[in-house]
Length: 401
Image (tube, rainbow, N blue to C red; front, top):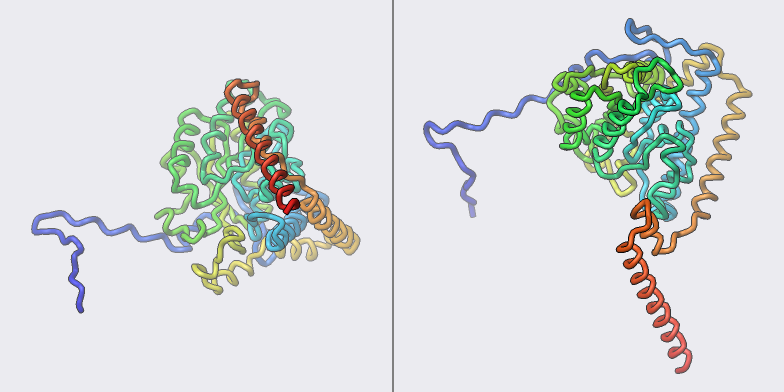
């Protein structure tokens, strides 16, 4: 049986739908890429972004990269062992996060997504407070006021408007453009390439531009929004969207920790001076799955993964440090020990996390006591007690038989 074609066809004189715009090629998407350290581990110069770091700072960047990768590997293993409900890994994106985190000043505030572990650690957040979210025992175990990093946001792009609002608050508090480095502050709004297709992203960019908010939009373009390639998110390179909102857009090699540091540092300095927002696109790649519930082999080919493996963010730093004689055996040995200790603390700490009492969900609904919430809490506890009594009575009856 041959099925009839029932799709609509334009009649004579009826306009046809325009053809979809061709997606830009890889070369078009990476035109103007800022890079200071190539995949071969060789330093490069850039006319607009210069970076002078001493050996101690270079080693600290490498240390953070290594520890972040080890943490990520341990977290994924814990999820596979049933200790975490889910895990959103950042393997391949370490340079973007470490570089951006190293550019922060103490007063700056970060609004992360759900895989920005390197930025959280840069603000002193305990790794166990990140893992507690994925174990399901809380919504984030750290104090945002202490660490200047907002709780993780799992709803795509939902953190972007609050980030702009916080930045506008900094303006009104007189914490921008004073010239005092201990006071001037900026905000980093973290998101991925897929988030740029959300309405909140456009709204946030509009508000930031109109109000000249001191915010850096830090987009980690890891090429895949779950199973959708970036070509289906945008017909232009993502950083070029900044043009339409009247702000600078910069494309940086997201696997180059030095370039990311230089670009984000420059954007943050601009924001702190009161010169407005910047859109930074860190061009990188998610080497693993979107989360541990995802199977990337169903939509990505192995050749693409291998191509990006050759651009590994840790390998290029290690190559450079060895060539310059900066990385020695003593440092490597101490880092390996620290890495093992971190892994052990993470494994033991996750298993020791205590499940909250179900009534804890009422504790922080409001900052101050609220009569309705208290009444609902009392009702819940009464029902919980009846449930326990019924279970106990059932056990006694079972024993009586």
